[in-house]
Picture (cartoon, rainbow, N blue to C red):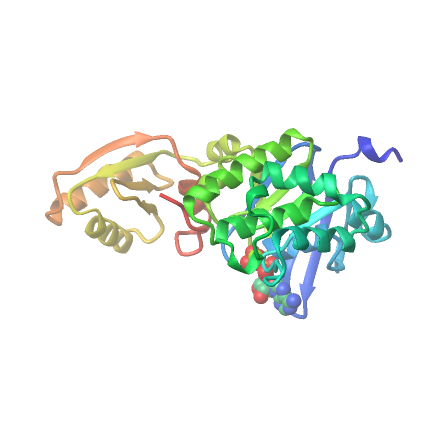
Length: 315
Ligand SMILES: Nc1ncnc2c1ncn2[C@@H]1O[C@H](COP(=O)(O)OP(=O)(O)O)[C@@H](O)[C@H]1O
Ligand SMILES: [Mg+2]
């Protein structure tokens, strides 16, 4: 098999149970080299378990998978040397400096002559001026950048990032995304999980996970196009009250509350939208403005999963 012609990730029916809990099941995924793929889903959907299966850290209880052409069941060692994994609970050594943390990870991976690679990583994560600072004294955003640098020290072909931007302030998140773009340009494949739907929108393709299953995959636009019916924008003075009363009247409707509007989706579209306006006016919440808009990823996820389970948006 010519490994470098294989997709970065290819799984068929991959599954993992913990006793009676089916954390991941029927997981079919194909990711091409150079792609940025985002796994999105509510808490406990199985995102972290899926990543750990793909890294060869967890043994599957069913199905099969190939990473860069190597078999997860029989070639885990070849896989591990070619991938990087930034876990949700990734810990740096707080009493070591930035330089020393990277050196430590270089030693774990047996990277010889790591200094040049370290300099490059510090340059493009813009951490070079702080290299003598203790990791314990860094801000959340800088810690994530250092963790990313440690994950990249052995020049992996794929990196798996489990919620890399959780706990990072919005400004640093922007910078983190610029760094991820640089990494993509170097030809590295990225598979990440994120609870932020605005971040999912920036991936080449995304997969929506719920209850251990991949229920939808495609480019963000393809996923948005799968939503039947129309999403309406509702504007009125008291959006919070409008949200609560509509939620009560039509529990099955997809409702997303933003600062300046309410997005409404129902499978029946037009008729329900008009009925909603009439209901709001009857509740003395008028005047109400209604107009169709293109759905956001959040609208799609709320429609597919129900708002209680939908992952959080960033609006
Ligand atoms: N080591 C484990 N032992 C038992 N149950 C687990 C373990 N890891 C995950 N689970 C369960 O598997 C499901 C999926 O968890 P996880 O993959 O962490 O989801 P996510 O990352 O999407 O929040 C959850 O119900 C979780 O409790
Ligand atoms: Mg997780």
